[in-house]
Length: 452
Image (cartoon, rainbow, N blue to C red; front, side, top):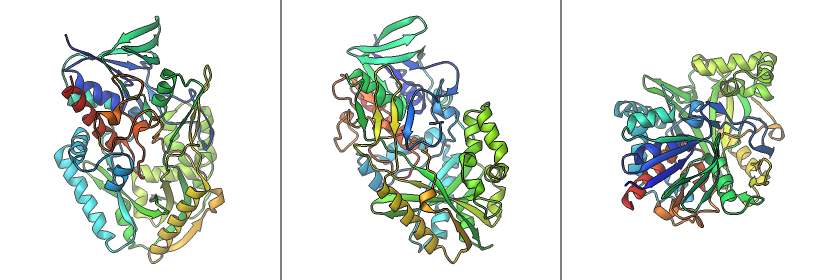
């Protein structure tokens, strides 16, 4: 009889893990609900959150129902900070690329990367090479297509605790215990640490170490007609789109600068709650509040359409969007409250703000010969929101062996329980973490199969 694996969460990592193990184990996936919908009201964010959407979702596929599949690798320095030994990890990155893209598609993307790097040769900035596949993928559907095989059982319900020998799940029929020889927590960068704290008797404790990529619009610029920055901002290919951000490092923190098309130099379209309105409506299309925001800032809508259709990349006006790196802190994390909603604190520290500000000045100085006009938002008025790359808050429950051995994923105090989602990452540079998490999922599946 096959051993039993329970995977908690059918998002990006959970979908890949379940399908990779399906032929060697009896796999059960626990997912919160059948309906695909964002999770807005299960956690508070009183410190650092300016937007009520934390961009998480339930339903098979999880957040990938809304996520644009942005793919980017961590560099060796960031991998080491994350506790991942770069040597040997390249093969798992290759598996992750193969999960999303064909060889031809990846070759096209790499040619765009090399061309962008050549365009900026001799500059201080390095390139953040991010790929957006032409086709958005629901991870559950894609994983089952890539890794077909034995049936995966799906249980819809809320996992209350991981216990010795299984998981307690509250379903429509009541609370039941699903037996398991192995448990893989893939409930996400926010969901998994809450579950682990509840399982280990810390229902009222504080779970530290959270980090994300605070993002903010900081300026508008007018570029020269022949500016190299236009060439590297966004490269369209048949397989997808390559977006090149410019990376600067100040005080050991990275900031990436992205240019997005604008209509003119006025700042109103990149300030206030409507500045990300089309992305917010994608997550919550029937929100009267957000529709009213949209009607109240039509300039932001026009510029968002320019960006989405890529027509604006032929123009001369651009908004400057930054994403910053955060370090794990003991004061930043999730406050548990037994019987109440947990609260997430992801505030930007004064030190981080100074680093981001210095990096923006480096960008403006380095490309002064390409920029005709600049209109900056004062640093004190930068409006941050999180980038939904929730990371780091399970690291107080797992050791840091320095390589991706089984101990890297294993939860201390919960036998044969592993974490595989963003909450495992001790660092993420300025990269979307999805590609790295798929690579880690391949590694964990390999380890579990080898020890079966």
